[in-house]
Image 1 (tube, rainbow, N blue to C red):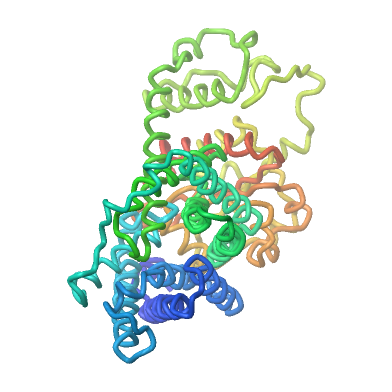
Image 2: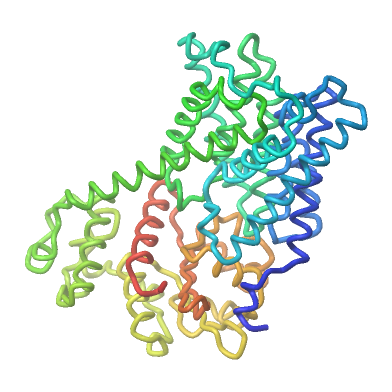
Length: 508
């Protein structure tokens, strides 16, 4: 199969998206009708659909469609039909219409995202809720049953007028974001159905336990669930734990502000989460822009100065790498990093090495470097200079990807690691078009276990993939193995890798 065929619409998958979102919506509607808490209703339906997708070994994100449908199903029954009888044929027909609306719009979003993946903000927590929210609004515009339905209740504001109630809301939303993030990390996998399962499990906590808190229980459970959607965000959108925490706080603030708006509309919690993640992402971009203008290390200092007595930390390391990349872009390639005296600089930390302690012979076991082109060699050089001890590069040849260069990779992995250009991993890298990472749990999936030796997997705490994409074709992939156990320093290293990828020619 040609790589371009991966970009063609798979109508069988679209049909499954339609079915999953339809079932997710109508099942949640009737869970709410039988007096099930809306958070519990959505969570239970999402858990069932995600477990079904995992059991079927589906890798096409079908459970995400079901999750989006469940958000729309959280709509208040009176909004759906405009009558109080929720067991008659009129309500059933109205529920079918809402479910069909959600299923159609979600399927349409998947069709569009085949060619324009950034349009629907893949990786942003709350994205599914945003789609569900728009779907419910479209349904109300097309099939609104009663002119008496009030979506805005400004006269009933209760949270803003009671400041003491706001603090618990903020705690619940930020707590939901942090718990969801940790559960997601523990269940990390290439298959995104696990992400749905992790957030739904977090929602169950809010719906069953937090809901029982007197007075504010319902609001706290909803804020917790909204925060849980923040935890669905990719680590390349919200990189550090503090980002998830503050996005969770923003989520709580928006929940309080938006209480009288779109009352009873399903997907509202996800929409609030989406806005919070967008806000946090924008703040991160602004901070990064400011830091670049305040950088104290410039190209001239690096070319002529001695940095052996400087206090080296992660911020300094980031500035150094950025300056090196800027120097290369400007045609300056005379910064002799490889000739620096041992001990002068180590990415991310300061260590006092002596010449006798330099690097074990194992860590210099590199082969196939001469097989790389200039762009790939530049990436290999960056990986070596930034402290990556193990990596390998796979290149597409005759419809298969195979290792052409490596550093410190076992012979068993070198012999086993190959895969056709029609696998789901290739499709994912073409769709994401960015660095994709896997935690230690994510590396346990069958794709890696059958190709990477146990010895290499045991030494790896995080696996980063750098795709080389030209003209919408995957030409090759760098697999980089990280051994650091400290999550914070690891994420900073991945941040450096992401910045290098964005400013290099690996991705055109």
